[in-house]
View (cartoon, rainbow, N blue to C red):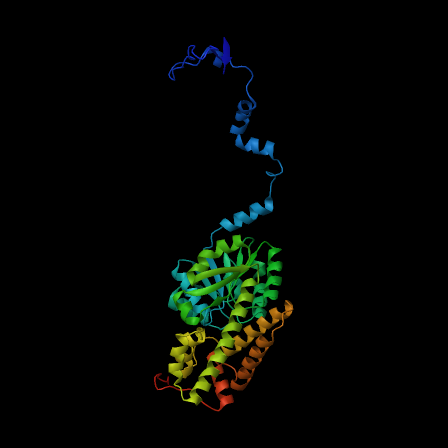
Length: 379
């Protein structure tokens, strides 16, 4: 008799088969009185106590991580109360979109009475100064002309910002200046993300802005619902300042495209082509760009020059693009020439001009004015 798997069987091939155990029968005494448990069996009770087991197996992995926990806790804090500082032509419709999305919004602007006008038309609360708008806010949005104004506002609101609050810097600012502000705020437990926008007043009105963001992914996730009320596309470009660098470079491409498109219309007009027909052909061809689609007929050929984005702001953004080029040691001959042409247009036309009025600078150089019988003139 030999033993196989603990059961007796015949050594002859024709011998009786090992008995089959009924599934419903009780286990045999031999199995119940099993000898020393295997290593796996002995390990199971410890594993059931999962938290104790994980600490015993990997104590370093389970070591407390207070900074990570604090960051995760902040990321889970919902944004409900927003202080919105700077309700100019862009900030006004953006703040309105936040109100319509259900956020509690307190607005403040440097222009006296503008906040009260906003509240009369749309609701919310008007604050007399920036600190009052930020005092109870979960997040503070800044939508201001330059980083200089942003720095002044942040200095004014820092004493009232609570730990865990977030500053959402939506101005077209200088990336290096924004990074310095972010470092200062981090020392008191306040986060900062930059989120400049593209799309102009028309898309701000409809909540369809393109938003370029920079900052910690957890913070950006936390402010995502607020940004989603103002825009339809939100693209994280990198760390703090990356959104503003991308915005400046976007406007560099847009500015160059606008000027060269106007020059092309002037050349074609002298040749005898209808500028409006040229725009149609460009939009059906490889020469299509944002200016051919949304600016040449609408604001240049119509002589309206009222897109809502100022010429001085375009020059500022081009200067920021060149600054990024210098800080990264990148040669920028075409960008520098573009910036000089726009600065010359601003100098010739004077303050308060829409950026599409730069076409008049090109017209002055050519001693010609663009017009088309297919486009009705405004005014």
